[in-house]
Amino acid sequence: MDLIKLSRISMKHLITLHVMLDTLSVTACAQRLCVSPSSVSKTLSQLRDTLNDELFYRNGNRLVSTPLARRLGPMVHQMISDMNQIMTQEEFDVANYAGSFSLSMRESTFELIAAPLCEHILKLAPNIRLDIWSKDNIGVSGLAKGVLDFIILPHDLSQPPNIDNNLVWETLFTDEMVCLMSPEHPLVTQSLTIDDYLQYDHIGIVDNDLSVPFFEIQLIQQHRKRKVMVNVADFGAAATLCKTTELLFTCSKKWAEVAAQAQSLIMKELPFNYGQVGYSLVWYQPSMNDPALRWLYQQITTVGHKIGRYT
Image (cartoon, rainbow, N blue to C red; front, side):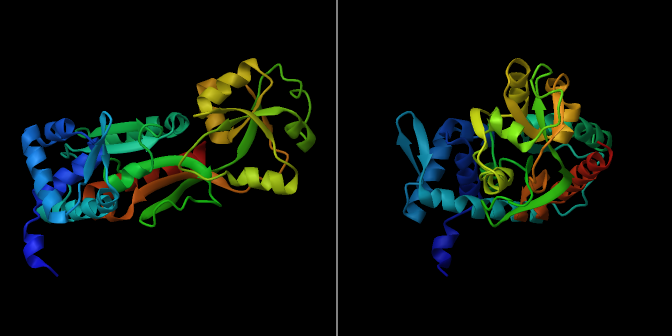
């Protein structure tokens, strides 16, 4: 262990690196830390010399982190979290807590979960701030960087993504999958068969954090591949397309029952085995050292389990 080299790295260096990995901007980093940009540049220069790595380099008009900086990100996040735990040993006071939490979810998940979750949390902790991001803007990688506290998303439970071994996936509630179609669709007046399902074109959902949905694999193995003619980012956009086309949309039943975009659409049971689906809470394992995040975790799971029982 090189104690002399370690002594040259302070929490100031680690926090600056942590924020820089999030912002990729010296100016934005300085604003967040309430220091001058020259102070951030000086701290980064010291860290570059100690680690013998550039850490960030300019590519056109933007800064890019080096492979070493990206590898250090989760470890630095953990060290900062541990130090914060040491500095805040007092008991967590929910009623007077004035900090902020950051969540990310798809727009469809927002419709199903965000309203009851906000109502529940704000009754218990009226002074906190909730930042709820679209998963399209901040995805799973934001957990390891410390930008996000939790992500909630629907996925095939038989295929939890293996993005990071430090990520924990916990099922909040299970769900069914259904097929939505326009009220004028030719299939409205009859039971949906597998031949009908495969005869028509479909709308798909794009998610870079998830692998090929298990139901797609099941469908190909048992029958054949469906024809996805349009891919969109979220359920709401897909439901809107359904209203004016003969495209079929396969989605979460719980979402379809509550979403405004789906209210005029016809819902049909899927005519094949699609595996098990549900909504999961995802977090970075080391973050559970923080009592405030443990409290938030308990509130999210409480609301999620309630939705699973009553929707």
